[in-house]
Structure formats: C-alpha cells, structure tokens
Amino acid sequence: MIEDSYDVVIVGSGPGGATMAWKLAQTGKRILLVERGDYLKRERQNWDTQEVFAKARYQVDETWTSSNGETFKPGLHYFVGGNSKVYGAVLLRLRAEDFGAVRHPDGIAPAWPVGYDEFEPYYQAAEELFEVRGARGEDPTEPPYTKPYKHPAIRHEPRIQKLADDWAREGLHPFHLPMGALLDQDETGAATPGSALLRCDPFDGYPSLTNGKADAQVICVDPALKAHPNLTLLKNATVQRFVTDASGRTVTAIETAIEGRTHLLRGDVVVIACGALSSALLLLRSASAAHPDGLANRSGQVGRNYMRHNNATVLAISREPNPTEFQKTLGLNDFYHAHDKSPLNPFEFPLGHIQMVGKSDGTQIEVEGLPPFLQWLPEKPFDWIARHSIDFWLTSEDLPKPENRIFYRGGKVHLDLTQSNMDGHRHLREMLRTICDRAGIHPHLMDRSLYLGKDTPIGGTAHQAGTLRFGEDPSTSVLDRDCRAHEIDNLYVTDASFFPSIGAVNPTLTIIANALRVADRIAQRITSTTEATAPSPEPA
Image (cartoon, rainbow, N blue to C red):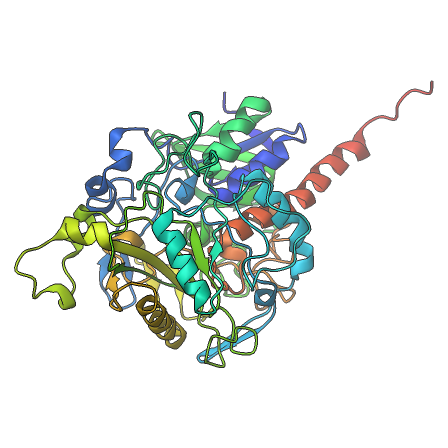
C-alpha cells in the first residue's frame, strides 16, 4: 500500500536512485522509490536487433526540439532501473586528474569541489556492489585504489586478444574493461552452466534477457525490496512537480500522477535521481511564487551546463574474420590525457578514451547503410561485413557551457546544444584509424549511428550530465558539496546532473559512488533525528 508520508522519497530508479534506495533501506526507515515506468518486459524482442535499434522499441515516445529547430526523440528509457537497463555496463572510475581543472582547446573543464580522495572508498564500494569484473594495474591512467577487483576480468576471445597483443607490440597499453557483466567463467573463459550472462552479442545497448547485466534493477532494487519491507516501490507514477512551504525552503509535497489522478506524496527528505535532463525539467516545472524561475534556481543554473560527451561508435573491418561473441572486453587510454601524462598522444590537450563496443550484425549494417568507401561493391554484403567487423566506442570530454541547456518553451521541451571540444574527438578518431592499420584492420571507420539512439545527433542524450552542478558558491551552482540544493533544506540530487565536468569515461560508476556518498549523509541525518528524540534507556 502506498501511504502519504515517508522518511525519504526517491524519485527515479536508475543507478543514482536505486543505489540510494538500496543503501537507505538498511536504516530501517520508511523509504519510497518512485519510478515513472514499469519493469522492462523480458521477451524475445530484448535481443532482436530490428526491434531494439531500428524500431527503438524500448525508447521513450517523446518529441523534443533541438537548438536548430529540428525535432528528435531523446534516448531515454522509463523503466525500473532507468537507462541502465540498456547501458553498456563499463564501470570506470573518473581519472584522479578529472577532479581538477583540465585544459582543452575550447576552454577549461572546471575542478570539482570534492577531490578524488573523498570518492575513492565509495568507488571501491560501488565496484563491489555492482559486481565489477576487472584487472588492476593494466591501465596506465588508472587512479589510486585500495583493493583489487572482487571478480577477475572477462577474458578476451582470440581475435580481441590478438588485437591487444598487436597494440602492445606497438607500445600501447590495452587493458581489460571493468565490466558490470554477471559472467561466471570457466578455465577457458566460457560461461559456466549457472552463469547469468552468456557470451553472446546481444548485450551492449540491449536489455539483458537473462538478467546478466549489473543494472540498477538487478543489483539494487530487487534485492533491497526482498530484504527490506520498509522499502516501497511505486511504479507507473509520474512526478509532476514539488510543492514547498511558504518560505520556499522545504519541499512539503510531491505531486504525482498515478493512473490519471494526482496524488500528494510526502517525505521528510526528498531525493531526485531522474537523470540529468529529466531532473532539471522537474525543478523547472516546480516554479512557484517563492521560486519563480524554477525550484532551487536562484542562480539561474538549473538546466544549464549540459554535457553528454562527444561520443561516436565506429565499425572497422578486420582483414581476417572476427567471430567474437562477447566483444566488449578491451579498452585503451593511451590518448586520454595531454602529452605530458599520455606520452603517445602527440597533442598538448587530452583526446579521450577508446573501448570495444557490442559486435555489429548484418541487420544493423543494412539499416545504417554502407559507407562511401564500400559503395563500389557490386552487392550489399552486410553479413560479410559483420563477420569481419571490429567495433569501437570513442569518448571525448565536452565542456559545460551555460548556453547548452534544457528548458521549456511554450510547454515543450527544448534542448540547446552546441558541440564543443571536437578537435580532441577528431584527433582521437584519427589515432584509432592509425593504430588499426598496424593491427590487421583496414584503416577506414564506418559510423554506427543507431547505437547512439534512433534519430539523435552525435552523443544524443547518452551520458547526460551537468544540469544541476554542485559547488561551494550558490551563485554559480545549484547544489552544495553534499548534493543538497543550496536553497532547499531537504532536497538532494544523486544522478549525473551534479557533475561540474564529465571527464571521458562513462559516468555510471561515479553516479553510483556519489549516491553511496550522499546516502551516508542522509542516513546520518534521518537516524540522528530519531536518536535525538528517542527516550533514554532505563538504567540496568
């Protein structure tokens, strides 16, 4: 039964909200987790390329407007577990240097108000919670750590191992990607009979039909619900706006649409974790007399400083067949930093991160069309290309510009986005092309646009961050160092909207680590209140 009042209400069940719910449920307090969607249905279409990519079966059916006036469908997913239901599950820490100011050709990525040292124990806890498979000591940019990974890295299959060996002979440092992939391996690297994950193509960008992906639902929501009756999950509930008291300092009610009716939910503490874009929109919808420009928006920064990485997925063609089944095991960070810290990067600014991505199949290639360098072929050999494909994901940092923002205009969602820092991204692509040529791979790269989300431009809404950044100065930030809104005493945020800069790795592990960090602050707050009001024990 859904009651009116809780100790903590968490809005959004992606990695930030689900991790918060998992942690706070252990306090014994009454916790409500609100999710806009339902459980993603386990069905054959989970692994159907045409359904997942070409038809965008699991993507939201919404239409937004871009800065150039064109409409598009955002790459969002409203399910228990949020976007993690279809994420690639690479769980990398930000580099220690990413917490400081980093200079790029287009400007400086600002420093964080909290350093890597404060995050390190929470990164360790996040890796253990999400059952990360990895290997320490291979990645030359890896930040300091206190423990090895809980599970060994997922082994490369022969063609990827050959690529790793070829690159190592060229002086590069390929490493095993740290993966939230629930693969139990035998001595050959094959999946054991009881493994939740199989070695198969439908993983990266697909829902996991076997629950073999360490997503927020599988790791946090379901186990916490089973173990803690004080945690309640409310599905198919859309939070419309927050209501505050007359002073505007405290959220007193959460207007929520359930089956066509508006309900008022209440929590002593409220946590937003809807994703950087949706969280900012929620605060903007919560404008009032006390907050005329949107809740917690006296700084004017709500919705601004949007970042999403400069991402690209590319296909290269191996001169020999690539029969790899689970390809996403290898990463490369030799060009991550500027030349002084990444000697193989010839430039005085960072380029970014390279990793393997899910294996292309003939259907994906046919939908996307042949690249110009293959148009001369008399037939369309989509399956032949897929058999020889080796696929990469490239990530470069973009910068938090105030004009890159999400907002409402005339009741419709607008996302203004001007690409920044593309020099580094172009150079990273050229470095990949060059090192492929030295490893038995044709030096041509074909863009795989569908992987980033149907009908979205480069980057789309993947890796969304930065719309509610945290900082010490309330005039330039929305949240304080503990991710509590400067202007609202009981409102916290634990998705990637708190990021002041984004680095060049997937933000998910940092979201999880930060949720654990903020959960400690909230747990202390809600338990100390009880302890302060509880009667003293009788003397023995």
